Image (cartoon, rainbow, N blue to C red; front, side, top):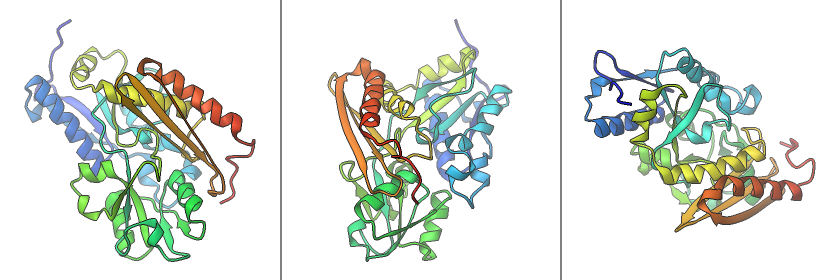
Length: 315
């Protein structure tokens, strides 16, 4: 079926959060659609939607509801047709979408690594005893405490610019940001050092941009198919199945990374006690088409090894 492409008079409305990084991701999506269909910029509207997670900055995410806080208002706007598609950082996305919506499209994945950010030292090992680390990620919190139990970890909410200002103000000695976000913002200059995935396994879906749409929107379906990156989709199918089987949320320290090697997918996963005192890790490999099954299987293996109180709070 031939679709009516958007025009300046009837544009495609792209919903996004309002941070500089979220806007950069929305603009990348727009640029790819413009190139794929030879459309002018005026054929698209980028619409900023403020989410609960953006409005509430003085509490940890786990205290106010977890990952859905960055998507609820955007998804409501899509369901009421105020927007046509939504652009998300995939590591913020719940594993299930509201009825009527689907994550249909992924852009090529960026660098999956974490970046160590500090104005004074180049790595976590160089920090003096008792130094203060700022992060809003429970995964990073637990991973830091696992290797440096002497460090004090404090809550560090906000977008990239806000966190960098907190560092400059001396609230903490260091923090962590995703390499992907800094690359997309052209802010590589703030990176003290990239952290290899063997030292800090990243969050599930880190570095990936996902695009959500209404299931029954044929125009969006056909347009987004032109910019979909299948390799990223295959990797995220395994990672998100791993997360789903662990009932993962912002309340649990979970890391996972899938990589493709020829026709084989390799998935590594890790779960960590919130205080960093114990971690369990494993990996699984197999045919790419079985990625989701492998993600589920690896999660079950780690759960079988974990004590019943593994994720109990001791922070």
